[in-house]
Amino acid sequence: QVQLVESGGGLVQPGGSLRLSCTTSTSIFSISDMGWYRQVPGKQRELVAGISSGGNTNYADSVKGRFTISRDNAKNTVYLQMDSLKPEDTAVYYCNLARRITTIIINYWGKGTLVTVSS
Image (cartoon, rainbow, N blue to C red; front, side, top):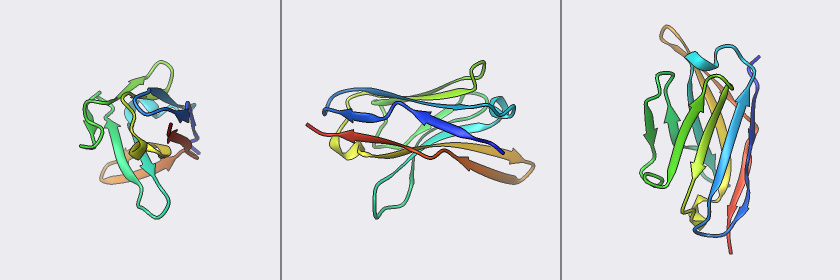
């Protein structure tokens, strides 16, 4: 079973920064696509940023230029650097690992970490 553990959430003022981390012990980390999603009550979970096993990245329009996703395969860790935070970034942030087996994708999720942007 793949376990993902997020850390780094908390309370930050608008304009501030946070760095989220997601660590796993699974041996498939380096060959898996990773992503950060977020969810607020009453809304669907949405993709914030993704990074492929090869290092290609993609971002939601709302965070482009402010957030940076990266990965360290030696540490089995994916990061989300969040700068210029806005109140609308407040959400529970979830780490995702997408394991591809031919045409099948199996998704694994962390338990989430709360980010609150407020003065």
